[in-house]
Amino acid sequence: MKNFTYIKSALNRIKAFFIHMKNNIVLIFAIILSLTIQSSAILAAPQSPYDGSMVSIPGTVQAENFDNGGEGVAYHDTEISNRGGQYRTNEGVDIESSMDKGSRYNVGWIKADEWLEYTINVQSSGNYVLEARVASKDKGGTFHIEFNGIDRTGSMTIPNTGSNGKWTTLTKKISLNAGQQIMRIYFDKSGRYSVGNLNYVRITQSNVPAPTSTPTQTLAPTPSPTQTPATPTDNGWNLVWSDEFDGTSINKSKWEVYEGETEPYPLGDSCFRPNALTVSGGLAHFAIMRTPTTCYSTDQYGNGGKLANHNYAGAGIGSIFAPSGNVLSEGRWETRARFPNGAGTTAYILLWPADDIWTAEVDFAEAIGSNTNEVTFTQHWDGTNNDKTEEISHSTDITQFHEYAVEMKNGLLKWYVDDQLIATQTQHFATRKMGFAAGTWAGSCASRWPGCPTGTTMPVYLDIDYVRVYT
Image (tube, rainbow, N blue to C red; front, side):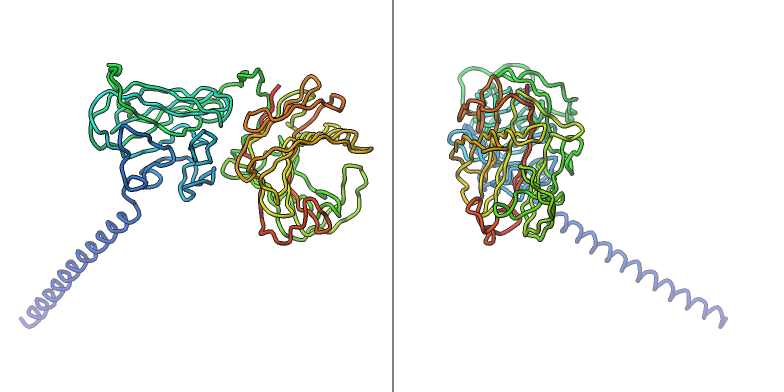
């Protein structure tokens, strides 16, 4: 009996222990669950209007003023950074300064299956006219607009407007119910390079009934189509070669990455370095960095060959000697770029002879960082003897993205900025094959141009969005 009593007492103690542990486990589980719910509430910010107020309809919805809430809540963008670097710089949507009259910003670099949402308040049920302000350099893509999950517009196609800065208005008649709702702009298919650019959506009342077709609800994203071969542009040019810089490193089949001296002293004080050239976010970044460099001196007169010590590094590329590079004797070359800012810094975008002999050069965008309101176009010829030049300058903010282009045909050079003809020059050199090149470098303190860079915070960058060549 004594042993039985002892065993029974031990079993009761064990039972009490497990009951105690059970209660503690339940308590611990409840605490973990509570913390998880609180953390999720903190991490997943609720969706709300950008400036705190719903957009009243009739009214205008600015593309850049999508709701607060972040990726997957208020918008979906395939990249984590704002490629345009403007306005809402901590968001993933690509926003740039707009060239549309009366507008400050627009959304660009739009890809298939991206979307934007806006909280709106429709004042009354009825018929409306929806206007979408869009632009596209090449054939654009398609999109539709949903209201509370219902597609009210059907597919809308962005046409080739001739430039990413040339805008047109698409119009649709729609019917809307009154009240608060979420307007989602869903980008279905890309065009040749992107869906296009979007500035705003304006919705006004209409007395004309909207189409009676039954609206459909979007159930799943539409997959992106295979990119189609290039077709002639509106001005008759055919795209034959391009680089959109969509990877994570420079495509060395298309580009030779420069090494050696950028410009001989006392004009320059830098060497080309491959590590000063990077690719990210759909841009090629050409840095100017303050770092000791040593390289073999090379100049356009062929007088190089000696080691030179410098205080800066720059970056450069050219299409002439690359395995899949491009050279043409006639054509159109265009690029979208923004230039570095800072005294003693400079960047160039040019055409260079395919035989690498300096008998001709066409700088169709060149600027110095001490003058951020001017870009120059310079034609060089007879370089090995006297370097004759003809130069034209144009007033623009070089620290913002602009499209620069040159056409070389029938003995003429035509220079464009944002698809506007700025100047026409007689071609002063004999027709020859030319290739695209771009680069950055720092001047020396013994030079008046581009000047002394010692007071400039570095690194600074030339950023290039794309290079396209037409025949």
